[in-house]
Length: 91
Image 1 (cartoon, rainbow, N blue to C red):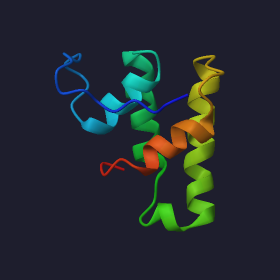
Image 2 (cartoon, rainbow, N blue to C red):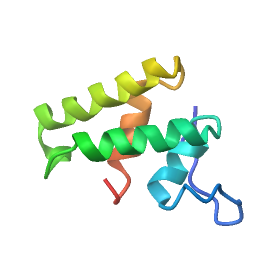
Image 3 (cartoon, rainbow, N blue to C red):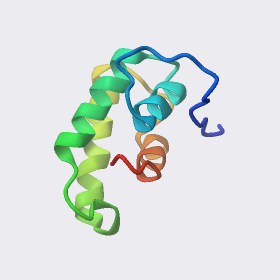
Image 4 (cartoon, rainbow, N blue to C red):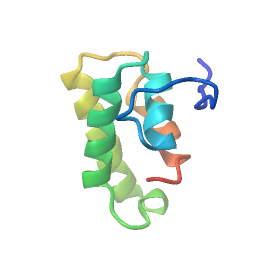
C-alpha cells in the first residue's frame, strides 16, 4: 500500500483545513468524519517532542488504534497511520 499525499487539485470538504487532515482523509478511504476524529484525538494525545520519545509515540499509536477500532477500520492499521502522522508538520 502506498501512502497518498494530499493533492492540490482535489476539492476537499471544508472541515479538512490542514494538510494533515487531508493526508488522513486521502489514506482512510476519503472518510471525512474519521479523518477529523482521528486528527482531534491525535492533537489531544500528543505531547511535545513525541516523535523522539518511545513512550509518547506509543501513546499516539494507541490513540490511533482506538479511533480505528471505534470506526471498525482494519486496514490500514495503526502502524501505517502512525507513519503518516509522524510525517505531518501539523502534529
